[in-house]
View 1: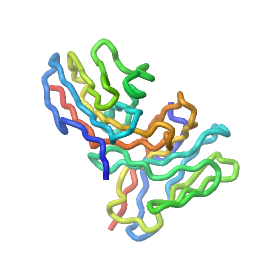
View 2: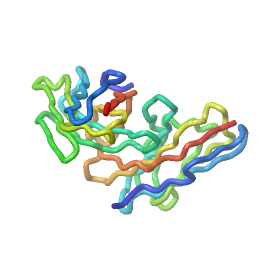
View 3: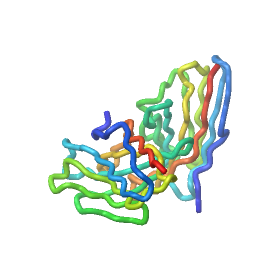
View 4: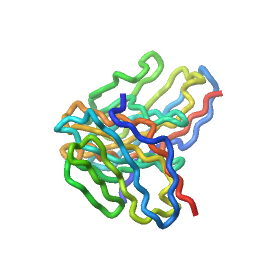
Amino acid sequence: EAEVAQSPRYKITEKSQAVAFWCDPISGHATLYWYRQILGQGPELLVQFQDESVVDDSQLPKDRFSAERLKGVDSTLKIQPAELGDSAMYLCASALRGGNTGELFFGEGSRLTVL
Amino acid sequence: DAKTTQPPSMDCAEGRAANLPCNHSTISGNEYVYWYRQIHSQGPQYIIHGLKNNETNEMASLIITEDRKSSTLILPHATLRDTAVYYCIVLSLNRDDKIIFGKGTRLHILP
């Protein structure tokens, strides 16, 4: 069964360092999302792509976070510089365009710890 | 802000039906009710969705009240693997609508 791939699975970094997460959605899924999940809370949407275009990045802290999906396939989420409060699970999800757009397929996430 | 209200936690005995309630009193006519669950250390998983009719699939059943202001997710024969956080979400399928997760219900299946 096709899956959303994310890496790294775990990342430990020191504050002020740069960190990057990678996501490869299910083949053919035009819509890609990045969510952040702080321990004990539900996932929070950071950015949504439709193909290579950003549809919504209103909740992305743009002073330190950036996201790209250059060829409309895989995507990278970057944090620079990392802060202690960025410790969280970063989840990538994808969805079909024109399908059941409420059905998102999530990866296993990348857990970030900032020391 | 999440448009739903769910109890923070529930227990259910293994083998029994788990009934997870959700209130969505401000739901509008074009909004669907979606359920996801998140097993520890994994990403959320889609379970089921519905508009106004009851729905059933291989994972669960969804019962939506006639006024659509609340719904119940039913896991008919809960197993230990059903221990997870369950999220109820209302969502229109308009292009600009977003899936917004609340805190969900933490379901503990007891052996």
